[in-house]
Image (cartoon, rainbow, N blue to C red):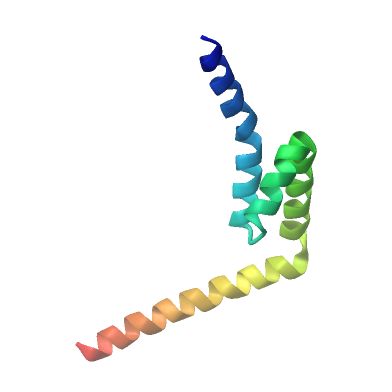
Length: 88
């Protein structure tokens, strides 16, 4: 019974650092750095990471870059479909 409680406590304790590390990695940041920060400062690192990501997403330059990437991706798709139609 004591082992089960310890295992459940460890799983619950590792949830926030894993979530913080995964979110950091999905936005191009270091997984291990944010995982360690999540272990040392669980709640604080979570809010710091999301504040950094929010600031990045709300930056007008980043929004324009994302729009430009979407336009280029759609133009490449159209070019590929036109090329395929020309081959047929």
